[in-house]
Image (cartoon, rainbow, N blue to C red; front, side):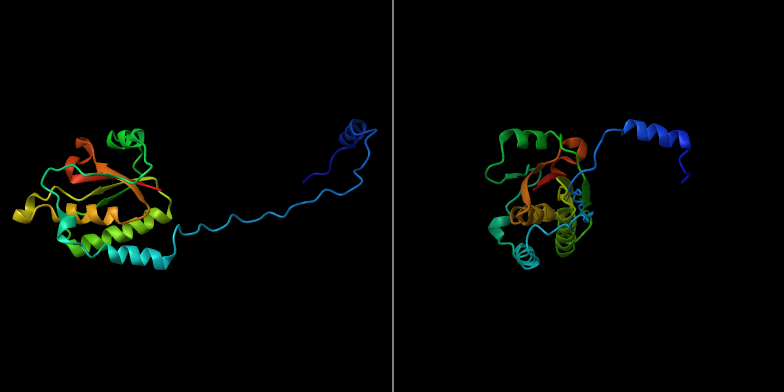
Length: 176
């Protein structure tokens, strides 16, 4: 830093002429670092929900080829669902489950959900495929994703993606 010139000093003194110092020194607040983000629910509760999602009953798995998936928690407005169906929310992250077995897909989905929830993402896309290679069993990954998302507290809504984003082989998921 350079030292101010005599002219600058005189100009400053003229500018502050007639002012008086404050009687009480102002309180200077120390800079506090931003608090670390906290999980939305405890690890134990998260592990319990994710473990619970692995036990799928046959009644939970009733999804057919080409069927559109739609789900929303209470309190989610029609306008929000309309915007989600039309793809108006920016997709912040994506998971492709093609080619995975059901146990691999469940693990990948759990890991993905943990990451996007921790990052506080708002909207994600999950590509589960249409299940055309599943034979008479129907779309097994689609069924598993449907149940797991319904049981995940942070998921407030989901619906089938637009055809350009995968159609009945993908879903948009809206998170808290």
